Length: 273
Image (tube, rainbow, N blue to C red; front, side, top):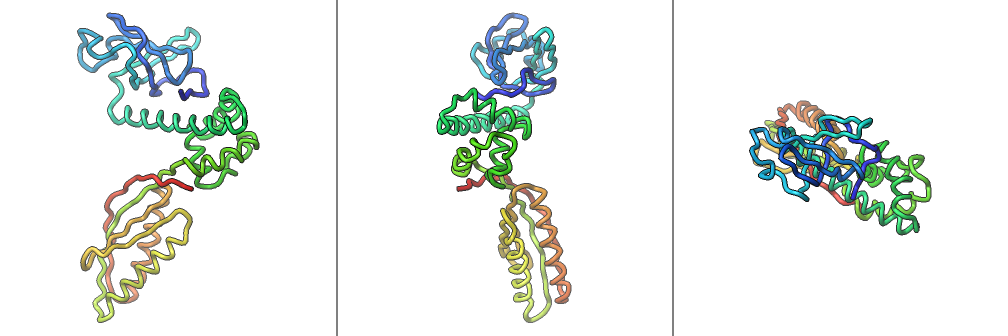
């Protein structure tokens, strides 16, 4: 089970917790990511409405996403809230937890190859990577995209050669795809040819960059759709701006007009092998 490198959660943090004991006035929950730590959830923090019977909302053994509202390390007290967690926050925390589980499984594979126990792996690899990246799977994504060398100096060198093939085989890198459309007209006999050449040049130039994929699709005159896939939204936007500038310049020089119509972005994942 994934666990955090720090001893206590921070106020405002979202945690995965398992209901341990339920009382009329509240419940005690085990913090899954913080071994040996428990939190208390008062009945007033269970739901946004008045709660008559806390067992209508919580059951022993139930796993929940809770928000930490108070922490007192000197007394070992951690207060939790369920009502202060919205659906989006719950979904984000569960996704983070799943990523941590993936990272833990990959690290276990590496530790077995090195003949080391997981406690050693956790101390030598997990802790420094979490401190540097915030989460270990993000470190693995960085290594998958930019090479295992990005982790050099953070963890012992003996781990690098073992982690490299594991990361290449199993780590999925999130990418962002943004959609947009161009309205392009060139009032000349060879106008279609000019437009086609401008789009091809812009596409091929952008595709020369690492981890960038650009596609144009004819939507019906005068519209042309563009899909840009990049490692992150900011890079995708940068590529779109460059392409738009190039297309607008070429079309204007040819005596035509071009307009960029922004649409939406999508997130997908690709697996590096």
